[in-house]
Length: 230
Length: 230
Image 1: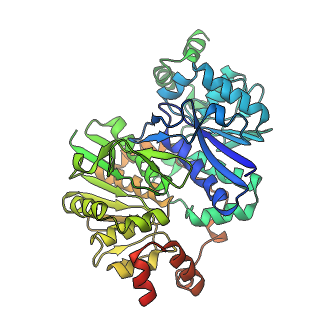
Image 2 (image 1 turned 135 degrees about the horizontal axis):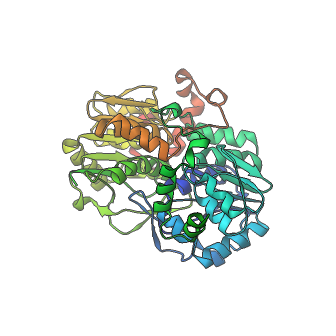
């Protein structure tokens, strides 16, 4: 193995933020022994609560994978806001970002990248409700499904991590790998609900109603103070 | 709580088959205390290997949730073929199917429904490579993203479970719940690879090449003997 793809796990994460990209990347591992897909948490073997009725157990702890080639940072709601004050987690992300070929986030995982100092001056995205908060972390918020700036790739809310992971597969291997994995996962989505039924235009996000929701979700977070002060 | 939505976990499952629907259904739980989303396995608390670099821990064991209102059965490759010979698992599925309002499968999870006797005479689907095998289990194979026949809903490969789960949300609650959850998960997929690049027409699936792949994947399965005999 010479390319290690790691996904960070932490309490309260959104399960699909991690498992979507993990499933796509695991297709690479299956077809090419060059790749290894692992999960990394503060403590190896511990069952980590997610927000979806299932707990997740990482294959490794931080010290085992100090310099992954790729690090994917999932998001979440209250769990992610708590993680913003976890110095060990932020230090792991900061360290990995200095050596990784690609550092990626899904949903509010980009807030963790920002808190670790990885997004300074970079174009980035996040879950639509949180996107404009990236500015408080030094980033330039962009309303796209996923955004690449240098070696940093951030994606929009939850399900966007799957699309981003296919893009990463193409960059790590080639387009034919992405085609094969699409075929194995039958990735031909047929959403029963169309985007037009729920889409909130960028200009409408930073309204009082969204701000209240945001502050409620951010209750345990230091970002909350920055936002209420600004 | 009066509606329990359970997802079965077993060794070697495809992680996204379980976590996709779990994440969608958890949106129901978050907005309405009527719903509870749980995971069920033979042994509660045990870390169960998946095919995606992460282990999963179920919140409950079979005896805790004998009659869920909804049961989702995920698929996988070798792990699922092994599960076809697990009498305790098949008995749990058979029992749940008699009382559940909805019994659902993702990907090759439909082979488990078939082995449990739930698909007899029903229209059903599965991962495209395995779809025609459903006939050996008494079902009528259908090439659709997801198929409903009575209270049984089967879906195609891996990612199809997410689309199916949104349909289930509408049936369990209403369309507005599916819209809200689509918004929270930003379910507006933008696949980097189009279906036309990998789609295998139904008539081409049951060829010698596919059959070899199938028999290889089915190595530990009793279905293999049926197929090689037929």
